[in-house]
Length: 254
Image (cartoon, rainbow, N blue to C red):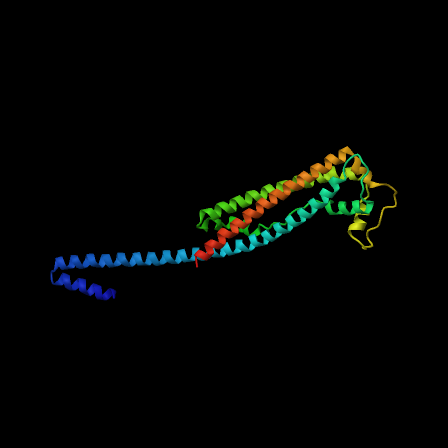
């Protein structure tokens, strides 16, 4: 093809047809420019196709992680709801009058609230997406913005969980050591496991429920539980919102 065009140019020059030669040269330049533009368009199309494919794979990976976190958050809320129910039962027994519940019932209730709750939230995929720079390829700004809000809500929940666990270890547990046996609690809570056995000391742990100091400690414990529940609910809503946006984007892209 190149030889063909060269032959035409030489023929025009030999025949001294300068005007035709110039017209031909301009046409050849236009063809070259068109060819370059077509090549650039194909290259841009190919790059855009690769980016779209990478964006979709990123969004699908985030969906998987968010779905898993959604299930974890729902499980945490169920546990917190149950813990609050037992905490409510204990708080109803607080006061100067002798509690009406049995020692075994009290130990059973304390077995239910005898630990703080921490949601197992996975961020491996999201952190990988951030570190690789792939978060920037998500075309919808509202999805990127909601993922940022999700991260902020997660940090708020984790700080609240940390504060709760720290106060529980510093205040709740040390105070109960003076009044009750966690061996008795474990014996009831873990049933027939031979590794757990009742305390050999004689005491009435229900007296603790008549103490003003423990009433305050229990109120703080209950308040912390409430705050963790609220942060968990907030993160769950943000998770559901992010999932809805991502799924909508993938559906519209089909």
